[in-house]
Length: 67
Figure 1 (cartoon, rainbow, N blue to C red):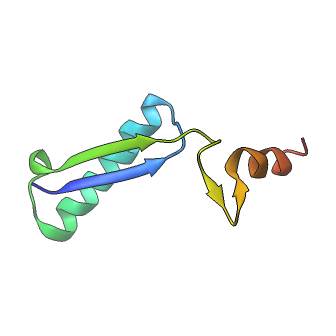
Figure 2: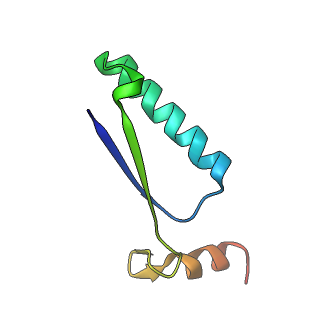
Figure 3: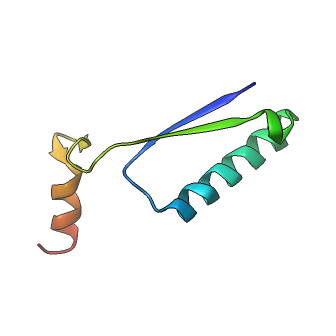
């Protein structure tokens, strides 16, 4: 059984459902593995736990919003 691990900042439940549906469908399309055999795991990290280019994600998002 394939496992898809997604590390992401917290998302609404409906967003996670859509992500899981799309990733599962694409892996099925590409490999032919039945969708019921594909598992998707979300690891949600707070914006204070994600850094890009040495800058905290929370700070990057605030800067984009002019805060």
